[in-house]
Length: 262
Ligand code: B30
Ligand code: ZN
Image (cartoon, rainbow, N blue to C red; front, side, top):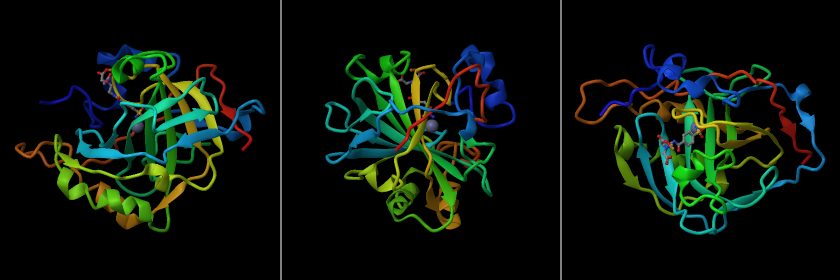
């Protein structure tokens, strides 16, 4: 029942390459974004989200993060525009976070880290038959990353943290219907984009990253709720908290980060 990877001393990001050699590949994520080095691309259109009819299904703990899943059987909930050639369907969102302080994001901005990072994971259903296929294709996924900065509490996050008691243990799933992630977006959708990978094994190099510049805020108390989740199942003795589930920045290896103008 134990995954071969995690975020501990023995099985953490520095060890992932042993089972997943692509960890040392040419388009790995996350990265440190240096705004001055991003190329302003006037041809990059704004990112367009069709989330109006968006409906969540459930919330679950997979031992690595807490994940909210969506119905992705049609093109009702998609993103388009920006660097994308066609519509990408929302499959799930999840978070990465730290143990304390302002660590926990995966992407960093000129070395600055945030308390947490939200990933809205979309797949290219115009080109691939299943999410699994898309997750392994070079243009299969588009992930919107949103930074969570410590500050005022976030009203939209309460609905999620209030459900955590049902998914405290690895493998637990609970109904989570009718949640629209629109409520988690910052005011501005100005973004950086670059070609990268999944930030967890299998680390497939399949992701067009869209990192929003404007963070949303989260209170210390709300972050505390995240840290009460556990990485083990209910029947296991281990009571390790789910925290510091982030991969540090990876080498850019000649990639260009592009910046949208609005
Ligand atoms: S992240 O946003 O980069 N943190 C996955 C999605 C997003 C991120 C990380 C991982 C993900 O879907 N992982 C599972 C991928 N696979 C498992 C697998 O072993 O090989 C499930 C799948 O297809 O459906 Cu590929
Ligand atoms: Zn993620």
